[in-house]
Length: 93
Image 1 (cartoon, helix red, strand yellow):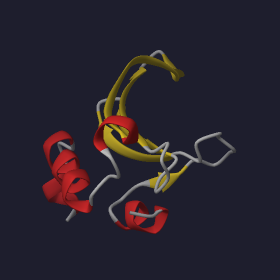
Image 2 (tube, one colour; image 1 turned 90 degrees about the vertical axis):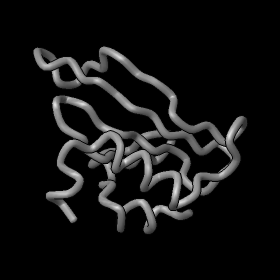
Image 3 (cartoon, one colour; image 1 turned 60 degrees about the vertical axis):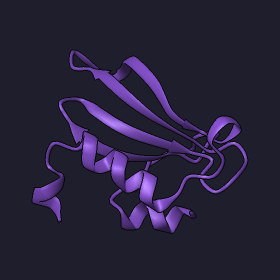
Image 4 (cartoon, rainbow, N blue to C red; image 1 turned 135 degrees about the vertical axis):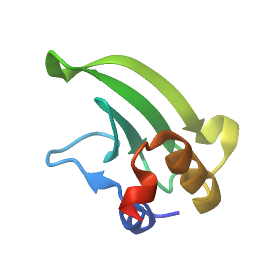
């Protein structure tokens, strides 16, 4: 998958430089999916819980996909994760 595929599924670029050229997908309740290094052998996908009292601080971070263990992300896997984690998925479609 390439960045355009992620954007088509609802991910958005961050408005500033990041080393992993991250894309974010808001899933509600101060949580988002963060995709980094998309389409490269450094590709990762994280779920982040942000601090509601300090929106720039991440309280919890869990790796959902890592190229080293999982290979390249597939569209089917990414859509499954989005559907499972986004409480508003059906309303967006």
